[in-house]
Length: 94
Image (cartoon, rainbow, N blue to C red):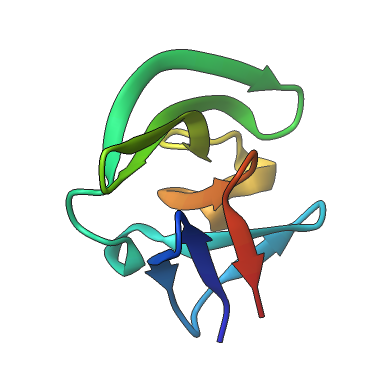
């Protein structure tokens, strides 16, 4: 079961995930409550659409823009709508 870990704390864990371009996408309901702050940062992917970012915060340690989601993905990426992926200092284990 994949899980995402930041600062020694599991911040997401699920057995219902999607994998796209080597990234594990977790459903939002698998995220640890209180560990995410919405960011103003966005990026655009030509086939997925606009990604919205979150800062990850655990025990006072914040990792800026370490999680992203596609809230309104383009049709080709519809299966990851409202799923969240991680990078930077967030470790994803399987």
